[in-house]
Length: 233
Image 1 (tube, rainbow, N blue to C red):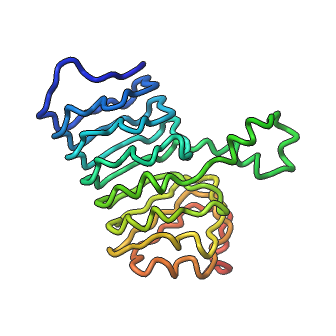
Image 2 (tube, one colour):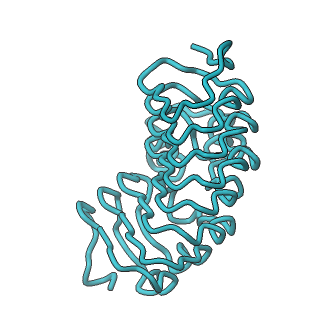
Image 3 (cartoon, rainbow, N blue to C red):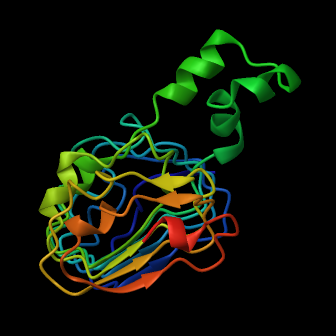
């Protein structure tokens, strides 16, 4: 299914739910006429890329749900300008888009003999990165739910602009096996923070990793089965 701009415009629409369809792609400016829209749900579709202007004109949007699509963590998936007009956005969910299994194998050479990967596959895997440049436009964001990558891929400097975050949710990130000292070094929180790292694959947490979170007031490490707390705190 391909979603194009509507023929009839409804400028007063506040909530638009398009979740659980088979949407494969979106046109640029597909929602441009809905300037009063406050909530947009595109979760559980089959989107694999966001055009640079797909959310153009959504000046009133406060909640955007993109979880459980095929929006892998790559710069090409989240163009730098894709969220530029979303200055009022407070809640963003892009969880459940990371294809963990293949990437894990790429970083575990001993297991690759059981899987057939060609050079193109491996190159594609290694291009994964946090879309911090795109996210840096979301200056009003208070709740961010997203997948975490492997511990050796650190969140980039664009996260410094998300100073209003109160909830940072990396839960169910099976690729995240540890928290190095500098993992949160590019964040700049100004409000009490709830950090959710439950149901990941954490085996270690560097004792200094939380030093970059001076406003941390709630931490969930629930159901990290291999985490040894006494060695991490």
